[in-house]
Length: 269
Image (cartoon, rainbow, N blue to C red; front, side, top):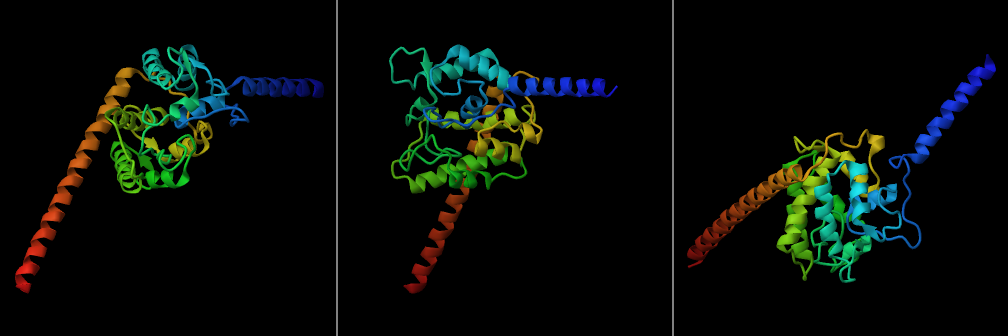
């Protein structure tokens, strides 16, 4: 009887070990010497889990499509869309692959006003920067939604405009900012309500690891280009709304200051 119990426990433990060994969600390894990473926390995370080549190098369309499907249930259209952009950062003409460090080429896809990196003017965009991310997350509540996610975007833009004399943000970069926020909320949280627990986002950005220990699981519903577009447009609409509100308040403040200044001038006269 004791032998049967022991054998049963041994088989169970062995099966659990095999699942852990073969399960990339549980197999996280940071980059080793010679590996490369880039400015995108998610792609770095997927490489750390082995959904993409762990080296971060020579990523093909198939690598990206399979990796995004297995990790976060992205459909083939999003993968093709992202691969075409990513491949454009490879300095080798007519390439059929890219490496994660290619994505750090400034003002190709990588842009100023990152949520978690310094501007290229100040340093390397492939390295996580705690100070930049602390500013970002200071605008989030316990739940990140379209409003608070957008507020963080605008705060980072305003900071970078002041601190970076070479600041620039192309229309493509601006579009990627909206898409990045829409994507991390949708992937780590609820793509329908466009909300996510703040701690899940913090965990991934700071560790470049999927937040499975916080209860996150691979989404069962596939993330399609239609869902991405819908959520991106929600962020874009909120972005322009907040910018217009800020501009209106600034104009009101400037008008009040001008009237106050004029009144003082008349008093001095």
